[in-house]
Image 1 (cartoon, one colour):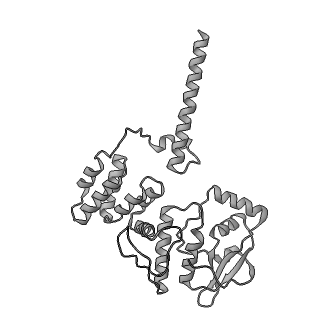
Image 2 (image 1 turned 90 degrees about the horizontal axis):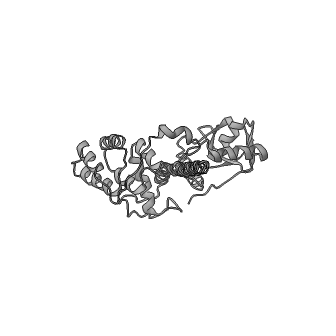
Image 3 (image 1 turned 60 degrees about the horizontal axis):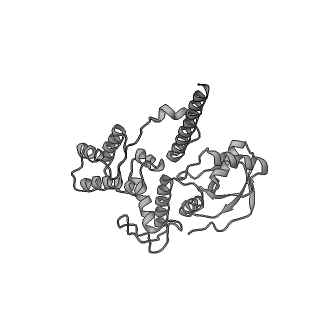
Length: 291
């Protein structure tokens, strides 16, 4: 993995003069972790300097390399200066450093990994290093340099394939409505085929399983996939399919504030049902006692 080298002495600059990395694949989210970071910086200041590099023809652009969340927090707090350390890096080296430094974060969305791995692969190509990401989703080998220390070469290739999904489908992967492996199969569908799939997902309120995604991929590659075929595949009963209760999210959304993932929403609703069940039991016990 590339490390940030040639770090120079500590300096202090106005955060408004620092240019965030334009194609940062990692979203700076205003979530609970960010609120905690803001409070920490409010109390203790920025303990780890931001890493920046001078870019531009005259070296007058201060390009952020590492510390996007700290920069966001500093601006939210209205800080006049932030500590920075300058590094000497090429644009390709900056792209690699941005990816490597952010992959250490605890919560990373599949879409973020997809964009990050693609960005690093392209940066490595600029440096003339082989990546050998040419085989199918289960067998690429990285001949010279690994793109990730955390994910295998096959897994890296799967994530990069996700960049071929329409944004709406990629969002469903982030929301855990579509699992990674079926999503990779769907990435081989054309843009029109993915639009047809989105329409079917909306009308049928169902997402494709791995076997359904593979069937659509095979038909697509044979030039035989159309709207009717997608509908026919999607309405087939899934293996071990069980009856489910469907509730439109807008009906209960006002009760689910703070629940951002499907798992958190499910846990909240289950606890609410358990609480209400106990309430009804207490009411029945009172009624019996009053007789």
